[in-house]
Amino acid sequence: MNTPWNYNSAPAEIILRNSTMDPDEQQQLKGWLYDIATDRDKAAFTALFSWFAPKIIRFGIQKLNTESAANELLQETMSNIWRKAHLFDGDKGQATTWVYSIMRNLSFDMLRKVRSNREDTLSDDIWPIAEAELIEDNVFDDHLMSTHILKHINTLPEAQKEIVNGLYFQDLSQEQLATKLAIPLGTVKSRLRLALVKLKQQIGESK
Amino acid sequence: MITHHPKHELLSAFVEGELPASLSAAIAVHAEMCEICAKNIQHLTEESAANFFSPDVKTYNSYSDKPASNTAATDELSYEFMIDSITEDESIAELVVQEPLEIEIKGSTYQLPTALRSMSMMGWQKMGKLSRARLNLNEGALHSSLLHIDKDGGVPSHTHKGFELTLLLEGSFEDEMGTYVKGDFIWLTDKNTHTPHTTEGCLCYTVADDALQFIQGLSKLLNPIGAFIY
Image (cartoon, rainbow over all chains, first blue to last red):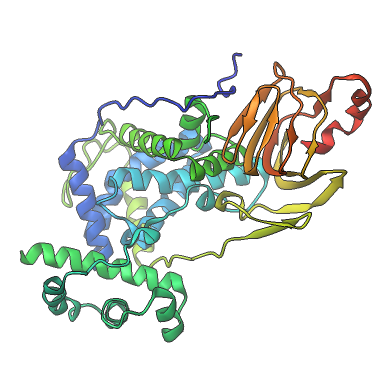
């Protein structure tokens, strides 16, 4: 039985090694991601880009073999980060894990294109980005909290404000809101996510 | 209860994106049903990411810092260009919420696991109580299929020239080695011979890298169609 993939009955036992990342550095990466999500902050993006680029290139060369493929991987990964930063949830995991997942998924699909001559993008089904599903339905149960939060909600962009108001003050479901506003459910979820990231940050600052 | 799980090495390779789509999907589906493996995958991903991004290659430390070692000046130029072109895009990614996909076979309806949803599927081929739909992944010798065995059906005693992975999606079956339930991840090689049989019927996702080899008496006659099933 020398194949590494042979049959096994018991679940794998995973022994965690200490993380090789400095906690301050992880915090810095999260900070940049939040700045991108809330302000479309190009300086933060540039910093994040410079931090990750050489490593993504290295990953690309390891997995995809050519420099041009590695560059494509870099471009795609960073562009995903720019457009998906609002979906990152720093309470649920590290920025490195999130970036790694995006990079791994893109490289998987690129490799599949080369090896199997297929243009399908299976990676998002195999490793789904499930953040939106994790948004709890009753974030603002507390009445006092609602009053406190109200003033912050008014500072949100109109599109996000109507989602938050509809969900939390008119008790509509995400599905009902999507129908009412004639937008896809996914748009409701991402606007909500973006609004919550902003609110969380503002409330944290005003404490 | 699920008692058969993918091995550690398989999970590591999965996390690093090194397995073919067929096997990656099998592990993803198993993890949807198995909390232990889902948690292990989470840990392994965190670990791979932290190891991979550990600060041993050149990095900038803050907004204004210059790179620690500037090996290629052209890098910086092309990076600037890349950053500009990426940040010009003002749209943000919207999440697409997908409806679960259902399939119907022999009068039963099943919900397809997320990981299999976008795979292109060929039509069902039927032989007695066995029905098989090939998934068109184009992975050379690796063949992936959905296999349905109707109530009280089975596969004659066989071994495998390579490996055979069976992931139980619904129902249960038993063989000489035991009983298997929904979520079980069953990896067999040419060292294993078995005669699966199901009482209640079952739907499986299978991946194999070669044809089945029937070994007993009359069922040897089936060998030319051994490739039918897996």
